[in-house]
Image 1: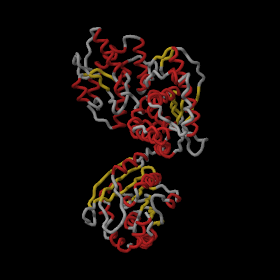
Image 2 (image 1 turned 135 degrees about the vertical axis):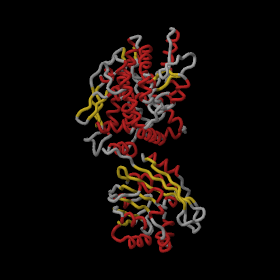
Image 3 (image 1 turned 60 degrees about the horizontal axis):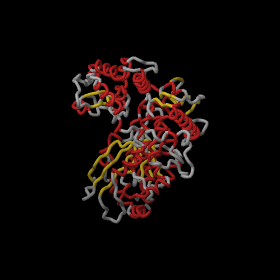
Length: 563
């Protein structure tokens, strides 16, 4: 912005008079609840003659003010005295500011963004985001309207900032529309407040660093994060051990879900996953992955049985995946240096079998995956915020790779390939079971009302698929069309769930208690996805109590409305 800085230099006195004619409290009233508090460290970007910097310093903040126009900077120093630290610095580089090594509780970019060329904005935003302390706020005001005095300005929008915030793992907290305090015709303002979330343990900041800042030549770090996020969210029962501040989960489950999420990317679209297109992916081997091409991602589900060549190939594919995970993201995801890794793998020797059931025993037979308990809890509690960021960053990484660029892959294709569960097939197993029971002249009733279901019925996700994608049999319940459409994406209230308990238990017994095979699949799924259900459980009532706990937990984490 050299030309703009020169303009402000030439007219510094008149601008200073104009700025100080307004009060901080009036100019920034729309985001008052986010104003800095005494003791906060604040960065004022494009501080002008120091009106805002002085107010914040007078209210107990430690203020660093940066201004590229030398004449304004001199006036600002004189106006603020020793209470503010001044630097001659500018967007997008912020070299002197970054060299301070500070993290700021508030960064204010007021009446500046419109002067920054659009080609520089993404870089500038990323640098600002990286200067935030945990829970820090980034506040950017947007000027709408042309200048009549020759100053250069570019169009601005909230949507642009929302995109940058998403890419930098910031949350948009508030957007406000303001009139121009100087009463200029055709001029209005918007202020966008964004923040860097913090869970109090520092784990969210670790995760954000891995997502946004860690160096990546392939998508493996993001793939491992997404794998762990899915397990933490969907399989609270998968924890094998929780002691000494660590959590251990089945290593086989990590390998299985690694395969599952790459299935559409590789088998369906063959989308490049690393910067070196001539080098194949380490886990794609002809005798493992290559023999599973006929299986869909949804076939790789808890409780599924594999026989013969499929069993041998799945075992080999899991082992190949675990080697890639160990050699790649586990080794190169660390704090400080490699001696302080975030993750640990404890392998177990395992011989292939000609038939396998994907249950806890099978998944634990590969060994254990160990991580900090606080990081595991972070994955569970903040899954709904973290996972979309991981998916978004994964797509951005894939878009950088040459062969993907040459193919011109549409954005929607990337999203379609990273869908976790195929929504079109989410209830087919339960629907098939209902039809079998109806052919056997069994009465099927709605679990919510007891009304008899005849030709038209719905299969309801007790925990809504939109919030918690899970197709386990305990979560899929027969109901009427009217009830399901009325319930929509809500969870059953406690009184409704308890009133429906006899009908839910009767349905489970009827549908899944008839044979050992059906029963084993039902309880295997429940033991992996519900809290406190042991692998040996054969008690439907135990599963019902655990389902109630899971409903309350998901409601607490995601703030879902009750029905």
